[in-house]
Image (cartoon, rainbow, N blue to C red; front, top):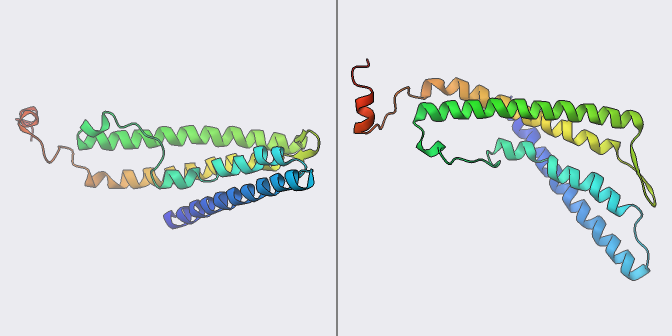
Amino acid sequence: MKWAVTRISNTMEYAAAAVLMLMMLHIVIDVIAKYLFSTSIPGTLDVVANYYMVATVYLPVAFVELRGRSISVDLFYQWFPDPMKYLARVFGTAVSILFFSLLAYQTSIDAVQSFAKGEFVDGAYIVITWPARFVLPISFGLVVIVLLVRIVHELRSIEDTPLVPVDHDIETESLYEGVE
């Protein structure tokens, strides 16, 4: 399971990189056309805002989470004893699962509604936007799967986490006196 999640997350990262390259190419061609031929590619701004940007931002979220590179604040975490660090990791992962599950659920409802309406942007040119709405629930769903794999790993590693800190100092020693 972990292998499959890693593969899919990596694929999403590569897809985001490909979309980014495609966006750069699209914009460069639009700028060249604008200055050399006094015309531009129709709907460039709408396609960039509704497709390229969404894909480059949300497709790699699972990859970032899998690598443990998401934003975190560990102001007090470094001072926690090992059992408290373990509990903080499990609690943080559980809360993240709940948060991303809610995001995946709501964005999937929004995507289905957008599909049912045939959502589009009506500017100088009509750009159909409903397909891009499905990027979010897919990305958030994959993050939930990554987090589920992580919490299973954390819960399985409970045997590796000592209940009493191994390198305790004299002050901590007095806390555990008489406890056997």
